[in-house]
Length: 307
Image (cartoon, helix red, strand yellow):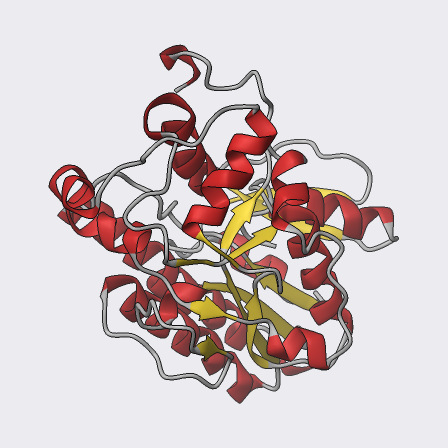
């Protein structure tokens, strides 16, 4: 597992170990782990001895990547986001290809994002067979998934899990949305009518386990069925924090302060988890207010030191 110490990777590796699996986690540094979890040092963006650990594994779960959430899409940030996903996945598949045929994994589960779809404020639903977008992150996701699908040539089942914003304590993307709202805006960002694709970390972990143990392959939208608009998100946060909803911040101001990143806040798309639901997966936290209540501490963000 790459990215095994992140928001999804950490509870997922613990859940798999608790179920009796042996988990090998690729980390930036080797360290001791709890029973059932072994940490090895290395990065998928650089060849190294870590590649030898792929041989003999039943499956590979690829979660690693430079955090996308940023208040500015600088050239350096864009390069790191792209290289960590596209080149990192290419190196990982190369390690799979180098393993003896009889010892190659049988499945590759690769993280991806619903940002692969176009920006669309309409009510159109985006299932896994929908058209893909042309903006920066859509291009990153296309390259990311293409590199992952190359593993199919070596006999692996490949599934790309396209997640929305992961709701949960410790989520950087969620914090970047929720904390400024708590401190300053206290209202919808933009007109509030854009769709907000999200999933709670508990369901994300359960979905990875479900896909791992099933025969699902191809694209898999990892979003809660209870998708809401950004204005509903603002009201749900207000309810959890016991605060009033204010006017919010208009689109022009967001674009002035955030540049290109504003597109990912004022626009969106209505992604739906069609593949998961057809396969029989059941979401536990499909209600946005309840998921937010489990993810926000009302005392967080009361002052600027919370940033």
